[in-house]
Amino acid sequence: MVCDTAQTILALSAEEVSNFVKEQASSRKLSGLMKVLNDAALKGDKIAQRAIEHMGFVLQP
Image (tube, rainbow, N blue to C red; front, top):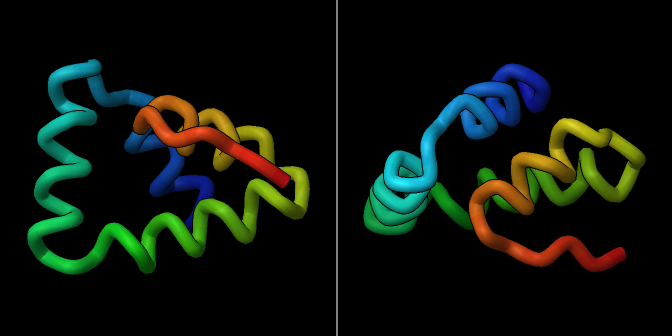
């Protein structure tokens, strides 16, 4: 699931990422999504790390 979600995010253009983040935030899903991606990234999942950065967030261990 994390890989599919991260791949979907990475396939978005910059404009699409902006809209995606806004939609996730307004539907109150962004926090849960970020938790899943962050947990995977902290375990070394490079795709999750790239997805977080692609959305404009800073990845900090």
